[in-house]
Structure formats: structure tokens, C-alpha cells
Length: 240
Image (cartoon, rainbow, N blue to C red; front, side, top):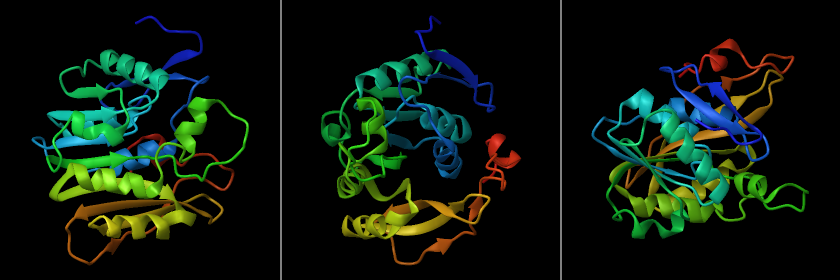
């Protein structure tokens, strides 16, 4: 595997899997690991990731759930190329299909209402004028994927009874829940993450298409020690 300038291979500490990251582009954070550990699917399910980035979540979800097929959408050309390299690096060509396209165009690639599980770690910050690369801006800010658009896409993809797993900034959790319900996605499970200083950071949600009302709320997941270091349970990637 030939690496480009800025690329490095890291151990995912799961089933011998590895990931190529490029610090010049966008590196995944603990959000990705948390979401991957939350996703539950059956081996025969068709799963879709919206916004795959380097492919880390799809790779972990496949390993933990032994899925036959995951379709991963990635709109950014550079990130899609990196995702493709990671698919090859982990010999997942038969189980993980990259679609280098905007998830809004999903009807070109998959049948509406055919998907069992959708998952996404979306860009959950409002658009700003903060100076950063275009790749990082699209990955972090809702330039291409506003909250309501995300929920509509997930609902369009899913079968009745299908599950959508998503994480979002805690200060926008109410907005996310409103848009999920607007598009017939009932929140069934959720929890928040907090750092070692008692500050809540992330809302992590499972919603079900055409699901009944009633939500199980899990205790907060503490991700850091007071000094900011990740807790060992997060480092081992096996905490939920």
C-alpha cells in the first residue's frame, strides 16, 4: 500500500483492522468510535453510511456486526479516495461498497425503502467563517448536509422498522429530535457523552422509521479523565 504525503497507518484495535489517516484532510475523532459501538445490525441487513469520510465507522460496524453489505456515501473526492484505500487495506471490497456521490442522490444507487440500518456522524455545527480547509469545513459544518436534509435522506432510505443511528452536538439535540419526528423517525434509544469535567458534549440517538413513541435513555457516557485524556474504556474501542 503506497502512502501519500501526510498519510499514516494506525491500528484500530479491533479484529486486526487498520486505518489510513491524512492529517492534511480530516482525521476521525472519538465520536466515530462511540457511534460505531452503538450501531446494532443483523448479518443479513443492508446498511448505509451517510458521509463515510475515511471509512472508519463502516469498517468498525462491519467488523462488530458481521454484515454482508454496507454502502458508504462520501461526497468529498479526497476523502472518498482515502476511504477506498482503507477498504482495500482491510480486504473489505466484497462487504463495503463506496459510493463517491452526495447522499441526496441515493435513489441513483439504492432503492428507496430498501435499507435496514442507516448510520451517520454528520457535520453538526452551523456554518461559520472560521478559516479552515474546504475538506474540514464540509466535514464539520453543515455546508452540504443540514439537519433536516439528513433526517429526510435517512427516512427515505429506510424500510419501515429500520433503524437510524446518529450523533449530534448536544446543544442541537432538540433540533435533531424535531427533524427526526418530522420525517417519521421515532427516537427509541439515546444517551449523552460528557468529558471529565461534567460537561455534556454529544447526543447519540437510535431512531426507528414509523416506530412507536417511547424512548430508553441510557446514563451519560464519560469519555475523558479530568486532565482531558481519553478513558481506557474508550481507548480499547469496546465500551458499549
